[in-house]
Length: 226
Ligand SMILES: C[S@@+](CC[C@H](N)C(=O)[O-])C[C@H]1O[C@@H](n2cnc3c(N)ncnc32)[C@H](O)[C@@H]1O
Image (cartoon, rainbow, N blue to C red; front, side, top):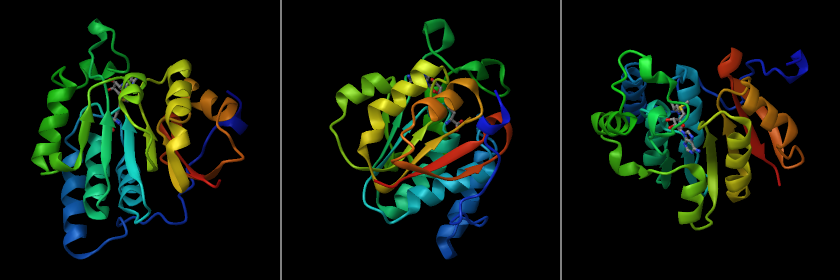
């Protein structure tokens, strides 16, 4: 991968290290951020805060996450949706590698129990956020068949990182993002995600707002401009 295809951290102008909220909401966000440290997963603290801020935005439209695993990212998005009164769908087949699942390489990751669905439910229950999330136990392709077209203000892609899968996630869902809404890719410097961004992302419709986090796990944020 040549350097001009590598994303460096560049925080979006709207990003706040405190989450952009105060009072009771700030206390709740701190509690969720603290709890998230104990959840198995690969999301950085600042990435969680950025997801929270996008989910919390007053823009019209729902939120959809592809790839929840044990719920580290799901927690931050659910809290943002709670405070913006937004609908939130979290899509993941929760299949183990032995059952044909992908990206469950946390199997040896302490303290992962091997059951991401149960951990996801426990995570959301522990923070009283389960009622703000509709879980779709399906691949993104299966979920798309069950889902009616509806406006999204945030689409977070963090499922399988194989190029064909990331590209499919983008192509199946991105048309639902409203102008001004956000498309977010986790792990943007891994091969399949990076290739999707450079080869398939429609740059006339998506403006690069920034990247949160460094290295292979950098999370890039794109705003739909038309
Ligand atoms: C990298 S993990 C997600 C991490 C999570 N967002 C976090 O914050 O910890 C990837 C997840 O994507 C799921 N996955 C794999 N293929 C998928 C697909 N086609 N559609 C939806 N989810 C998928 C896996 O089951 C796995 O739980």
